[in-house]
Image 1: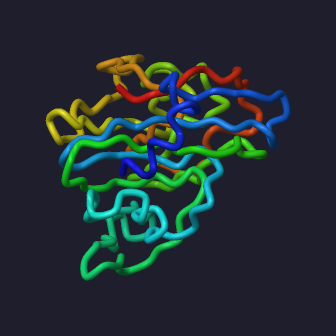
Image 2: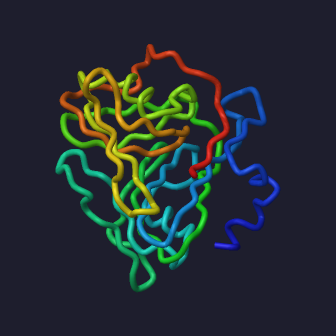
Length: 219
């Protein structure tokens, strides 16, 4: 892990996402995820030279042993991608905006480093459970209530789950009822979320108002 971090100390000094150019295709930055020994939920918001789970896992050596990706069709974390004998199996495609649930043997830090995507992230949400990520261009979605409001305030999505690394549970669940979301929790750009929807739709809608990037790091 040190080989991955040390050459990037100057770039990673601030500890969040930075924009250093005006043209989106030329912007280089990162989103930082603090991981614990146990289960963690992270994403790939920046454009990274990673196309397979084996390439993603290679960043961590033997510090990460399992990677899970939510399968909307089967509504399961299936298949699990496991490390053993020096390789990852099976190998699954991943890319910009992927959300990954992984198990680490030790506390470490993961950086999604690269250029900003030229096209803002959108997600095809299906009826049932889904994983999404707060898009980098939606810095206005600073709480679960605001994120839920952008999803229809209970008309479509009724529950948002945030992974709690401290308790190692989807706790608390954020539910909509009586005209509001409860409890209200802070969110950050690049944060992956697990949610339940009653219908199919695209989120965020392409007509949604977006805001400039803000600094992002998970707590």
